[in-house]
Length: 137
Image 1 (cartoon, rainbow, N blue to C red):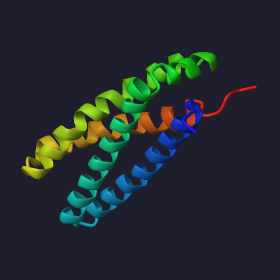
Image 2 (cartoon, rainbow, N blue to C red):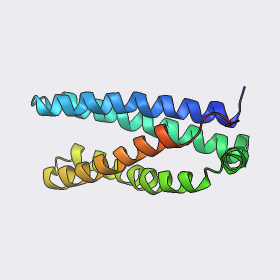
Image 3 (cartoon, helix red, strand yellow):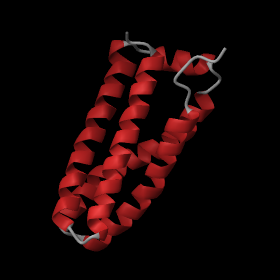
Image 4 (cartoon, helix red, strand yellow):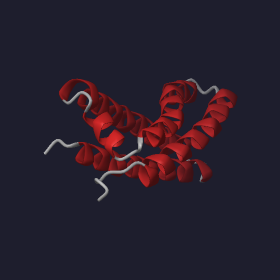
């Protein structure tokens, strides 16, 4: 059933899953396997983009207002705005980071990667641990 709780829970699972993928990408990088690092990052990009588009489609086309209504009822709109403060910039940096990596612009890629890791950490913490996915009693 398409409820706000189910959408948020699915997003938390997706964020956790791609975070594991990101860990594998950084492990490949640490081991010097740049090709594997790039391939995993491409998969990461595609999965994050698919989740983002699915979320936006659900939130603004399929069931507009459903998520805002649920988060308002849980007094979690401020938490959502804090989460968006991390996730929106991370989503904007992601294509630039992918492009710089594919074009082998190492300095730009590494700088964007460091910024992305900070933003992604904030996205994971606020999204998984602070946004509600079940109605509180």
